[in-house]
Image (cartoon, rainbow, N blue to C red; front, side, top):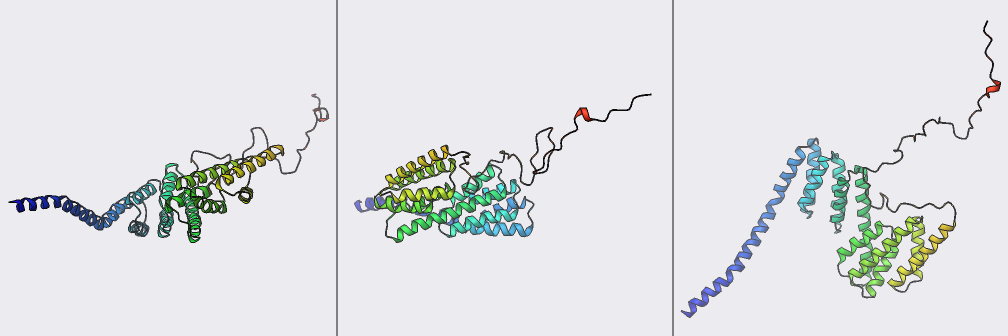
Length: 319
């Protein structure tokens, strides 16, 4: 009787494990058959567009590559839906997918690129702007990965590698010099700083870089300013303090000089997507209009003097 009770207890204890095992198998089986179903869903979206049969196959083949490499189905689907809705041409969509695909193949995070694409669609950005922005973002991710790999090759142990790549890429986007970030990773890791602390310093460097850009410094001048600060720094705290002091000196000097102009802190090349509602004074290729009542004159020529009233020829007397 006692033996029978023990058997029942064993069976009851195994039931939860069997249920978990069955659930895991079900999920795995569902994933193996889902890609074909997902492709069919994407095909139905593309069929509602004006793409040719060749273009549709081209997009679906690239979308399948993305799915097989682990890009989430919902992200792939959203890009296709937005592309169809915004009338993005097939080759531009293929270019977007290719950039994401190459980044995924390099083992780099693709979420920042997908976020930029969605941001571009939300702002009704031009297709060339979207492609330019995500191309720049992908390039910054590669540079950030180079910084990380170089530190690892020198024997540094770094936790949260993928997270750090994204953080460094953001700072590169804000014109923080690559050499400065490399110095930060090496010095910060040597000092035993956590990923959160390195993130804070990286964000501080971005803030200082944008401040320098707003004060009118060029990218080359910012790079030189950061380089000089590093030469006089022995730790990460000194680095930020030295950059700020050098920046304050530059700003004070710029205020004394005449004709200094401030530059905007965000550009398309740095990864910022402009709002389509923001208009420029004159579109590319258009001639700026002059103020009402003024006639255009040739460059460098002076207007001809008009005949004074006193010298005007008098009208003949009436008979």
